[in-house]
Length: 224
Image 1 (cartoon, rainbow, N blue to C red):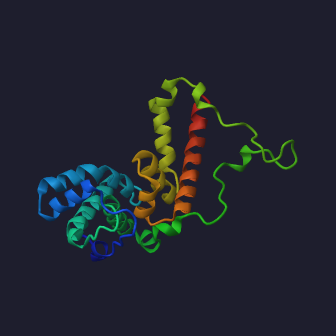
Image 2 (cartoon, rainbow, N blue to C red):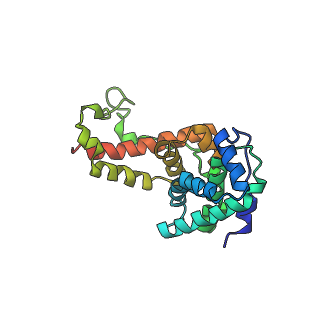
């Protein structure tokens, strides 16, 4: 059953409103057009499932979260005031639903609090020269130039599996940001709006996530 708090606590931020396509789709949705809802599901269901997987343990539970979120979307259509895009509004409902389902810790900690505040290094310190050697602080070994590798090595199944595993092992905030930016193709503004993080935090999270994935990929490709 969908918690009442999920259906009533979405906050629209004053970013870009719905596009012309979304406005037309929204009008059809409010008119009860079932095909419009099917179109909306086709557009965003995959993204929602991917984000939900970051909050719950199994795909089955993630699918339940997405279904509950769709119920929240339908219930909230008349209250949607268009101060954000329809896509980011839908995703915020999904995130709220997933956090509620994900457990006490996820419910009590907002996504924005997972944003970086300290000085966590994006690249392992051991990859740089120490203070006692020549050129302290410089690379001990430069990152590999992937352009010199065969194309099949970059696109191979094992390489893709390494990328997927590396993303799954990222901290929650980093995993969500890199999934939306680099896999789903969202803009930085859309990610900030949907996940309620600042542009600065979004940029740091993405940089750290990409650095960790790159490091995992370098280890894989060094044996290619």
